[in-house]
Image (cartoon, rainbow, N blue to C red; front, side, top):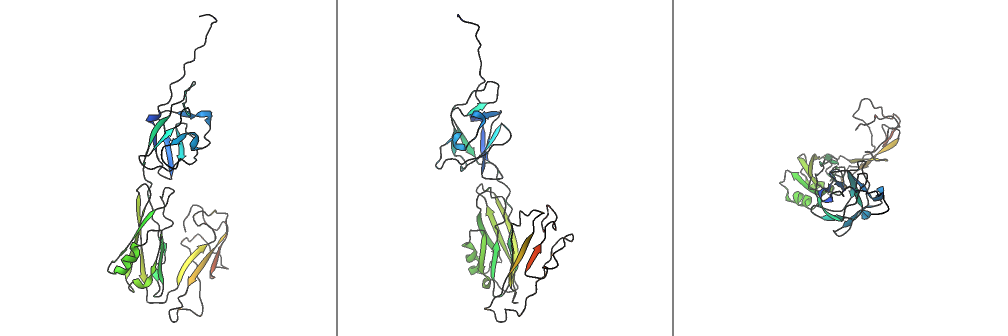
Length: 290
């Protein structure tokens, strides 16, 4: 052979994509694609999932973002167990000095581990003789970024009208006529929340219907109570419902008293006995639940 010398370059073998693991991440509606060895993406750019995958299920793939590790990429997906997606030809490379790209490869989407589900119930535990039972499980956690499926139950179950009313509720909010409850009987309401991966959590709350004319009360904050910065100030508004259809239910005057379950927190003295409590900046400790 004339014209030498010659340089021969031996490229590393392409990554074995059929050895990859693709499953839903336990903390969100996220698909995690993990390879047994480090890999790289063409031009080291991930503009969107369509640049990497050919979805073999109707609906395609949504955009995503990558993890720091070159051995895995996080991708938002719509898939469920046993669906398949195909990695496009020439997009996934090995991580060697002279990498080569893998051919188009089908990968099965596994279900993955379900996140723990925590059911949080809110609502009045004492209901007026003229009031409704209003409970909410909206603050439940572990939904993996999708809506829960809810099932509500109650004990005792000696009132078929009450159990029938609950059987029709499949959402996070329960609102039924308080007249379905017998006065001075403790009813345990239980909510089961199931996420799309099959994980289930349960929560209960006791509710009593009193013969007294107790007003309905709810607290409405002016900020998201789960994401409050120490440097923020905000108001808590008390929304009171007086049941005018009860004789004498409307009082001539209303007294408000705000309290907090932390002795280190000092409430604003000018609003502590008013309908709206002002919470000043830096008055609450960080990383705390009150």
